[in-house]
Length: 144
Image (cartoon, rainbow, N blue to C red):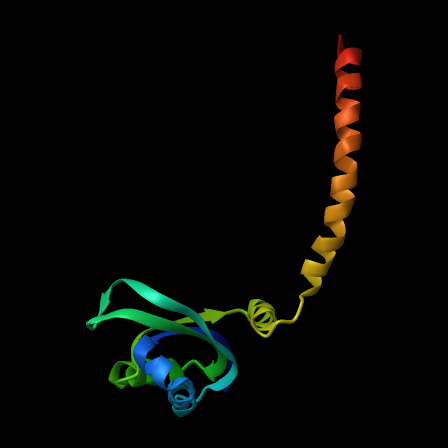
């Protein structure tokens, strides 16, 4: 059975999370494990006021997770989240493995090779900009 790669965003009550952060995150891990998922990376993403009330809650914490799971487990995950007292809302997105790996690296604080290449290219572009500005007036004079 092939495993797919998923991103999950879980909204939980901020008061409940602040009083027991380890218990809240372990509850989400338990929901994922019961659905057949293997958690790759997880972290709290955003804590603050919600745009609108969700089940009477004005504040919430978003917990971002990345996990691998067979496709059949998504229905069980959705069911478990709806039955949970911890999870107010959730969203699960299937990603291709290459994007999944890059996002997990960023979440875990690893630099991706493309970012290092961009960082090296930026000084070269800055050095080329003054030369292009100097060449522009000369090209304008030659056109006249």
